[in-house]
Length: 106
Image: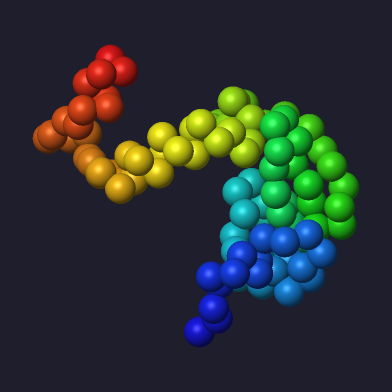
């Protein structure tokens, strides 16, 4: 088993991580018959509205706002709140119970 503690799969220029992803991940919306042969960009980090791929190319993270990072990357104040919440309660199903943050935000 590989040791992934040191973020070895996320750093710019890491061809090994790109190869692992190509061989073992099925990405959303692949073309029929292209699974395992598509070479998708390996994103290593984000800062504000930008992401950087494994070649060092800096891109505006346009789709992020559609899904989950519409406030930008590396927001320290959000990281602190996320840490505090993870230490209190990482996940709670909404089916039969509720939790304090959801009630307060409602």
